[in-house]
Amino acid sequence: MNQKMSPRMGPTNKVASEPLSKRSLKVPEALPTERIKESALDRIKSAVFRKKTTIQSIVREPTSGGIIFRFTKDHKDIEILLIQDSKERWTIPKGHIEPGETAKMTARREIEEETGLKNVSVLAWLGKIHFKYRRMDKLVLMTTQIYLVQALDDHEKPEGEKWMKGIRWFSFAEALDVIEYEDIEKLMLLAKKKIRAGDY
Image 1 (tube, rainbow, N blue to C red):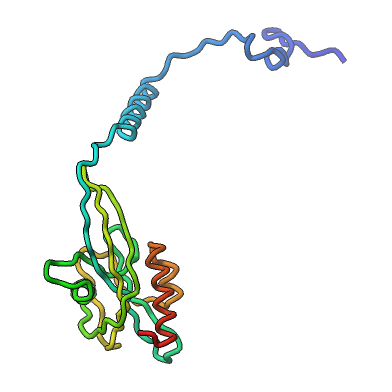
Image 2: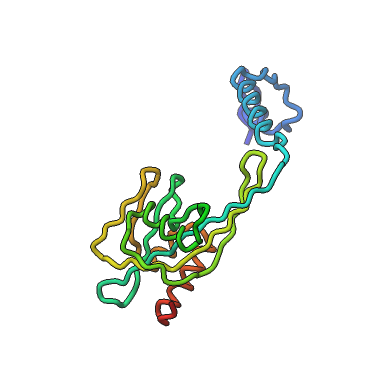
């Protein structure tokens, strides 16, 4: 069959059959918006890859807190009280050890300040966890002592501080699921083991 010809363009498949490199195409100049995007990208790159200030000192910050629990009504399981920080991460109440305080005293004070619970019993030391982060030209090494704490009054309602995003009781399984820090999760498992064994 003879191929149909177009009076103006020749064979209808001519353009498609030619290699791209042989086409005579006019490359348009970059649009103004493209130049703006490149400029913004350059600014982002310079911000990401700019040299950080050198660490001038190391600061050690001792802190203390507690894993707070209460028994469920049927006493078959426990619930864990967690707070949600300003970055919406679920964690336990904790804070800096003040001069003249023991870690145990700090845990009790911080729990009362951050949860409003007064009728609690600090039962046992569970362990310590370490955090490190950068604060301007300082490297902060934070060590947190963690205690097992029992809420003794089921009718005492927890009330968080203004900076918190939330505070609530979780079932133990839910608490393990939402907790943001692996080290605290491990101590929660140890806490449940101690509670079941009455080892506190």
